[in-house]
Length: 472
Image 1 (cartoon, rainbow, N blue to C red):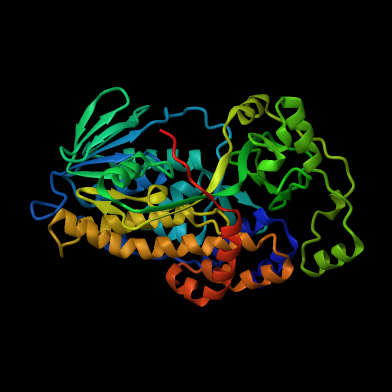
Image 2: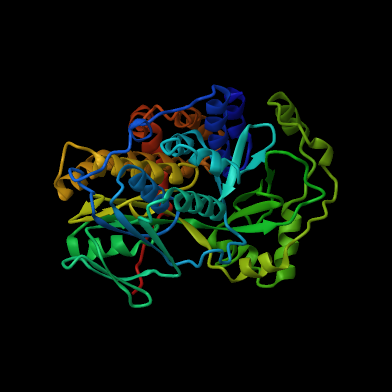
């Protein structure tokens, strides 16, 4: 199965590569009934007066998966730590077009560090027929992890402030000012506030953290679709349109689909094909979701690789249903960009960064969330350990452990630059993609094994990268 999946990469549009990677890793873990363990999962509840985090005040900026996950790890081990989470989004807000995250083997391994969390997350995942894999929207993932944290917080250690962002940080006084003017003192500040992290920006501007940050030229958006009568229960429906660089239709929990579209700036600044009305966008995506009759040679290859399932839809005019609210929101939403971002350390005095606040990468290999959860897990292990009792020594240890892996997977995702280089170059990606699905192999090791491929990828990536220009 894994071999067949790897071979198909040569014959599918770009976006499927990322998803097949996730599927391959998760399918292997599920097939082998993997039940990974970690030092946190195996540890008993510690804490007490001799704990570094005893009675400490922790402020986490960002209530997404990484921030919530870190808080969960801390309260399950330390009964006296007090945590405040600032999440600028309103709970239950407009997440109509939230994108999907594949529950790959590395991500599931991190969830296993908290008993019961994996099962809760998988319960809101949409199954992808034939692969034994689930995809969960980021909004559903965050909400389920938040609900899990609230249920686990039996001592009232954690307060989540929805609709409150971080407006200012006084690093010297260790104080955060929220968007509504509240002041929060902290012993430890965690930046889990995403790729546009204010916490990271503060450390770059005032504490000398060095940042390397580029954007890739392509844009992308997600669109929620209602259940489609003319889309069979297949893993993905590819998008084919001259204005699109690629795209896929994915299953969505509890019903319907999520349409992911990718395009280059010359095809539209804010929307693909410069579509500015609902009718224009619907027409574009309706055309993109039709099946063209494949050439005879292509059909032979598809059958040989076992990819001919659903070919009875070829040539048939599909009727596509749209959600008008989701379409209008799609048109108004600013497109997303793929980032390449590295910093020289993940900490400063009583401050630590996790998730996309600490690293930014292309989504090709489907490892962004998995790497973010792993960095949060490493930080929790350092904070809850017994070896060091000085907070800044602990944070230095965290950077030393987490940074090399994050840098390695960021560089591994540079292989996205080879997708337009032709099938011969795509063949070079197969060993890397097969290895990335094994959660017991470090990203650093995979990078060493594929250093020549990454060097070639980097040379192509440098031709199109755009330096990030910050706006005040």
